[in-house]
Image 1 (cartoon, rainbow over the protein chains, first blue to last red):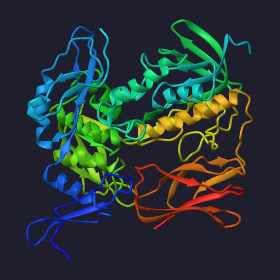
Image 2: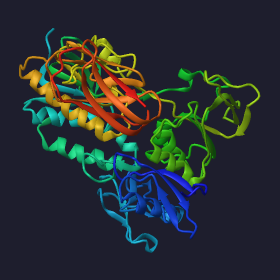
Image 3: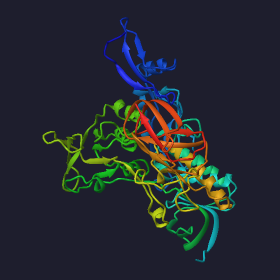
Image 4: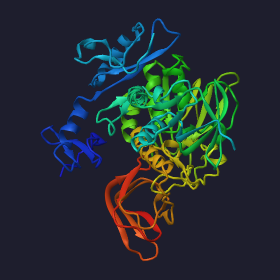
Length: 124
Length: 414
């Protein structure tokens, strides 16, 4: 039994069972996950501790409209530390109308391999 | 009363529940369907929910609110559904005659069946009676979301959030993105009222403190909020003297609960539940008034839009069948919430009905729970389900397979 203090406690979000996971370091310094009821819990917890990934959403004004905003998000999650650098890129965006839902507004943003996409349609 | 026009099904409200209800009515064969929306566009509150997490159940992927809305709207406009935006239902009678005001003027509409899908409102400062001055800078979380996401306004520089509802958590992150310093989220209960993933992704990720068992006891400032006073609360939720601290800020967001918007339902004589704030319904989602159905946040508050839509589809289908002359089910068996259960839906069932899926919510967080559905007369167990953990923030489901012949009680046991 590993009685070192837990580094983190989190609820697995991969299915509705919602196992409560506790992550500790073992004697060898490796991450030790407890509380998972299936095999998927371990990689989930390790990624969440070592390389958490997130999506992000915001909205930007559309040129050629009366102050209409288009909401945007990323096509997939990015490492959490990329959130603010990507927000700074998005803040410079002023897309021209019309904008289509799913339209790529910035491809491969900051080399992350994911795109900034529009999440609603704004007609001209 | 002479009506100007008639429809098989009239749906009031064009958000995630109402859009689905209009589609559900068509699927079940309703010929003439009218969808009435007060706002200028369809989609309801989805339009300002730019974050992702929608559609996991309905579309099997995680998308944002506006995308979820557009997909449902595209399905609606493909159907011969009459959509009226910028149109308000002023009154609804038990005879299912609606008084409608639109840009074209005032008219009476007779409906074969009505689906209520008006959604909910946020609780305000006045409703929770926060003492202090009355400066600018106090917003409900949802109105702040509208101002930031749809109107591109900066609402302040330093914010405190009272209440840990999902919109409050999401706005704490959203304001952080916009460069607003979020000083903390204060929750009167010993647990967060929003979903756990939002606590993690909206607060923990950005080092925003979540203070449980604490509340705002005073708002200070003359023209604009200058600070708020927070304090710990005791078990009776009263502030504990001597624990006050002053937090300088210019903005206070309130995320302190949602209330189903049932003004029209009351006008029609629909019986409401004191536990949900919404209508009492049977397994077809019909209210106490024959031919009037309810779904989505006007029925009870959902944590996931997808469930509001599923309820909408079901209510729309039931409404179409009623309008086509199918006999109303009607509730004769009563379902009550037992120990640890805040409420159960539906609250009434037709005797003999089987295979009904119920929604329920717990009073408090529970671990290693057995949910039991029991007959009140015979003590017979109709359904049983185990959960590792249940949170009040998460709406849960349980299916009752056998035919039900007696009043039932749902309880949770640790």
